[in-house]
Length: 386
Image (cartoon, rainbow, N blue to C red; front, side):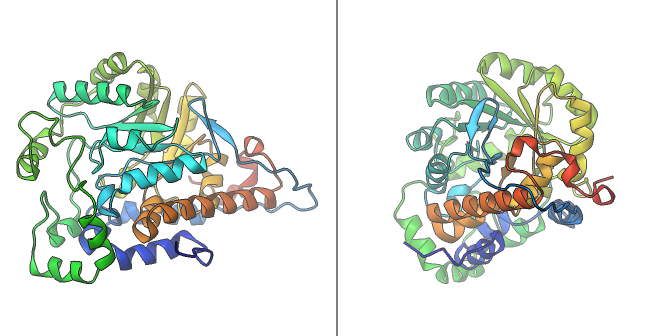
């Protein structure tokens, strides 16, 4: 077991992941669409918000505990659904779910995961959530929802902003495809990542576990490529949300809301929570950052459902700023993947530790000992998103 005590921030994990994960998979996780302006703004806009330091207050008995859709959590953080997680590290989704369970935060499995729902269910805790992409094959989607029920999933997320794919230049240049193209550059890159290669040789999970063998006509990686290319449904609309809600019958979370009008429609759909998200800057380049969009959406919702956000969170201060602006939960994607790619399960645990410690200490310096008492008053007015 690696000694991670000298890993003090998410940037340390990012640098280690870049060294250990093959370039095509690292770049897949750590890139945005087109100019990557929204990808950069997600984290840069957090840094523009300044905090008010308070002194001479009792800082004892601090707590970051809260709930997300009624589920107790150690802090207002969940692990976001991320595709190809099992390519950052062998059995990556299983390792992430185990770390999340031990720490006390929810883990969300993506439809496009390497490990299947059934695989992960054996290791996940009560905070096992599943994210659905709405495909043209509605029969497959129905069976996917039924599998989630059978696996004990406690909340379903629907991603709304991937009806079509944004272009990510790095994926094209790296030859990322299904299956990946074995170019000379990629083979040479793999040769410099022996630990990653040994891990992948030691697992049977190397394809999309929720799809291969479950979708009609998809029995291997070759048939998967053709199926995936035509399955993301550009016709997705609010009537589909009603159909999924009825089929699912449990807690429902809508991911990808960036506009106040869409937020009001999300409320009307009967969802339990919405996630302010621009897909990590991977879809519409030129969209505002998630933290910039958050306050207007919180105001539009008016407390009728929970508002969460993701995008750009690289530390506990970002979590605190999002909470102060009205988010009652946050999700981490890249921060989680950096830890996983760098050190496996221990790296995910370290990422969560880093976030919670920074959240706890910063909250205290701002004069609070309970996350529920934090509001916009901890932020300097002139630095808030406009």
